[in-house]
Length: 418
Image (cartoon, rainbow, N blue to C red; front, side, top):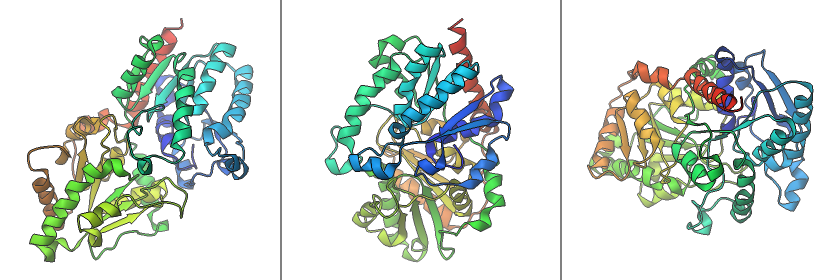
């Protein structure tokens, strides 16, 4: 939770202002920032309602747990979560426990609290927990400590999943996989709910924009992507680089003014990250027009940079189950937008509902590079108009409506326990 700038806390943060109007009073148990090691963004606190109770816990110090190979925040905090929530459940009545985190180890406590206190629990699958995605990938493309995490996840996931009372996920495929893997939960309430568009964040960013150093060069036409990189995005990024290379060859005086920025592409600690985008840029011979900043930036620095950009780019993973929750800040910025995804990604449908113009699958056979070339030409033309999106889609994918959908799922879980 704020002020921690962790991607997996955004679901709850954006829902807290609305839960009460849908019949739910929420209390949050989260890790004290001093024990997390996660980048802080103090402005995030402004978006959390003052009347929401937030309980903070400790975690084992990473400086010494890492000596034995234990860096996971979920594992380091497990005993502290158990102790604090035990206390809360003894002292007060709670109808439901909601896990919304990618520190999945914590979710195993749901079984314990359900058996001891009779409180049902819901898990929000923002990413896959146990997955075979990297099993056939070269070692240099696998996450750090993959051997250990793969086996740990394979052991821990069934502990939590075989007893869960409800599932929420950003991807319907994640839910289908889990219900196939664990027949015990095939009939529990489940809902596919994307992250929502939280408009107040844009105002907070605008009000504080002067405190952020600009990462863009105004002498160029700046196209921006902010988010993780990785080899699984090569197929989505390659059409953009190839269209840029085509432009540099045909109209160098125009296309040489383009800079494509990839910011915050690594989750590794500062100074320990490796570029994953620049090798592709060098391969396609557009490196002089590409900037990769591997270190992550704060959430509101991200929003400010999106607002300062001339155009925006969102690449997707080659994993068909991947859905980019990051699309909503891009849409709120109302800038020219290019998005390239796997054809099966749910992001394509969502962007189409909004009325986004340049949205493609990287495996399209109808000349995607020529279409991306047209996008680049439009951006270079200097058309600064704001993009007006479908108001029905804006309402449908608002953080308020997503909080409503979560509340409906919670109610279904309780109805099944009556």
